Structures are given as C-alpha cells and as structure tokens.
Length: 307
Image 1 (spheres, rainbow, N blue to C red):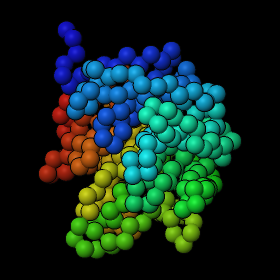
Image 2: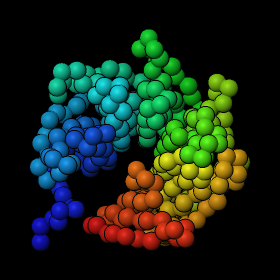
Image 3: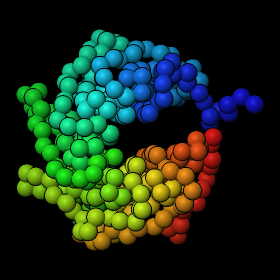
Image 4: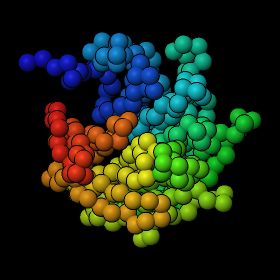
C-alpha cells in the first residue's frame, strides 16, 4: 500500500543517515542534513505537500556529520543555521533565489556541536548552541551586523545534547501578569538532567535548583512548549532511557513538577510541540513517530501512530 495523505515521503538524495529535517516558517521549504556532511533544501508543494518536493540546492561547508538545521524567522531574511561534529556552526544566508552563502562560521566549541535553536524573533537574531564540550554558546547579531558571543560554561559537564528556547510571551501575560519577556533556555545533557537557564543582569544563570532529574540515561532532546501567554510553563524531555517526561511549572519561581508521558521501551530521539502547545510528536529509535495530546483533565493520550 502506498503512503497515505498524512504520510508522505521525500527522496532526500543524501548518501548517508539523515539526522534532521526542518520546515521553514511558511511551510514552503524543507532543509535536511546528513552524515554525508551536506545540507539540502527542497521546495514543498501547495500546503506543504512533501509528495511533490523539488530539490533546490545542496550546501557544502561542514567537515563532519551535520546534526541539526534550523530556519531563522523570515523577518531577518532567508537564513538557515547548521551544526556539526566538526565543531562548527554555520549561518547560511540566501541572497538571490537559491544562491546561498556562508554568512558566518562560528568555531566557539572544542567538540561536536549537537544542537542549535533560534530564539523567538522578539529577541532578535539569536542562536543557542549546545556542545559535547559541556558548554552552551549564545550568538546574537548586533545592530551593526557583528555578533556578540556569550557562553554558559559547564552547562552539562559531560556534554550538552539539546537546547530549546522558552516562548517570548512571558507566563501569565495573557492575564496581565509578568508581561515583560525574559530570555530563558532549557537544555538536556549526558548527565541525565534537564536544566533551565535565565538571562539576568547581563549573564546566564541557572534558574532551577536542583537540576530536573527524572531520567536515568542521557537526555536526547528537550522542547519548551508554546504557552500562548498562559501562566503555566511546560518542557518536554526525551531520553535514551526510553521515557518522555513532561515538566510543568505553575508560575515563575515554583518547582518544576515531572509527569512521565510514556515509557517507549526504546531510546527516544526527538520531540516537537504543535504551535498551540497541546500536541507533542515523539520520534523513537524503532522508527515510530507518535502524537500525544493533553486532555482537559491533564492526562496525556496517544492520538496517532506512524511508521
């Protein structure tokens, strides 16, 4: 049986394992990256139809497997970031249509850069990068086009696997409290923990004491849920131990409370939230992607399963 409408395939043309796939803001283009050291950009069909994807360009610039790609908000132009085992982070900028240049190459890390994430566009063009060297770098473009570089040393001393920004809409802004947005980051690491960081008085500080500990093996991915101005903050974490944990904080300063979404009995690699923050996609090492939804009573139920 061929793929269903909800299950479409793109022939990537990569010569090795594909590590990440990212769709741009408008759902019109798809970027992929691979152990073959290449990044590929595709045009999607109407309404993001992957069945008629067209290869546009191949970007070569890394000297090792490329782990992640991330599109910046279109208000900054057509910009794609990539990170690699080669310790480099590359910012790619499209000038004329399908003509891409390496706008910036950052070599801030001493080991593989495993994860990148653009900040909400309200904070400007700002990229967080997590590395196996245990640090997180935060790269921010200034008004004159130069880049400011900050670093969180020893974020996860044995290695950072993932980074995710908090939404720009501060918790409670919908009901008129704490309306000033604050830069916050979640990170996961090889120390089995999730940590929350807050930018305060010009530097990054740990914002959770102690670190969030529920997993018994590496945290492979973290994802901060959109909060749409509601009071509660939510972070999902996925682990080598086979579990996904949903962490919630009732209001700023409270302790984070864990809820195990499910034990998948196999390592969980990636997680991704819907724009409304009530649907979570989970990708595990048995080549399954499942969708989970939070019900009104706070319980999470599986709503679909794709292989």
